[in-house]
Image 1 (cartoon, rainbow, N blue to C red):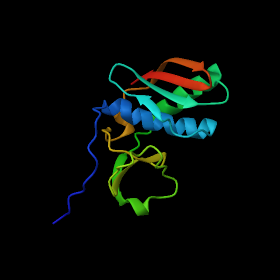
Image 2: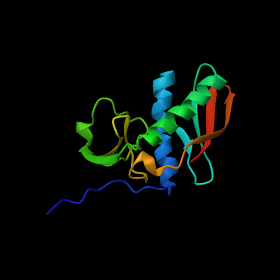
Image 3: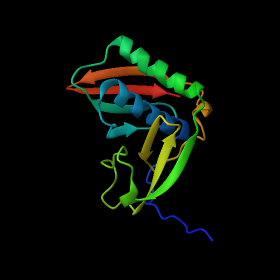
Length: 152
């Protein structure tokens, strides 16, 4: 008989496609700009927005490249899988800075192919191919904070 995993309760009801796209977007920003995962995201069905502190605003060409890369990842139909691990067994490449202080001892790692992995209890699609596409609808850069607003 399998032991039931106990995770913290989740106080959000994300739209799974937009939340999965958030993971892709965060990893793309890390790879392109060397920043950390966003600590400020608002994910919804109609539109989602994410902020990153950056020293300079990305160019229009870089913004287009972000959108293109995510759409390429969608076309690759990467699997979204889950792994439950003890807090003391977290791989070194998985940041834990967004976890609440009262996070459970068992964490769920969400992997998107070999592109991204992070601790997360939100809802996701089964593969990137389930996303119908990714479109950046607007961006802004104010006081060192770059914001992307997107739709899937």
